[in-house]
Image (cartoon, rainbow, N blue to C red):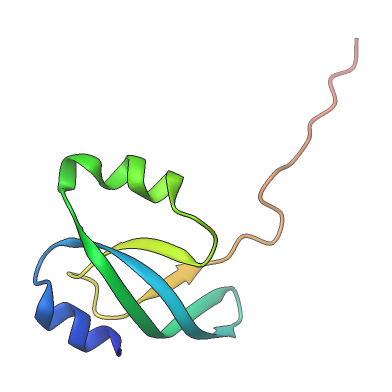
Length: 82
């Protein structure tokens, strides 16, 4: 299903999605095909986001496109001199 269709079915809501297809552009994952699993209550969205299985995403339908910004070096270790 296309993102615009999900937006029409679940207006102004968080939705748990299964990612079916995407492509990468620079530092972005542009999600082109999804399968909506269910709506997520706003109060539960943060917890659901961090507990989502691989290949799943919680996203809000107020966004015109479904895009995930990628971090190439998400963790940086800093060594302290003693």
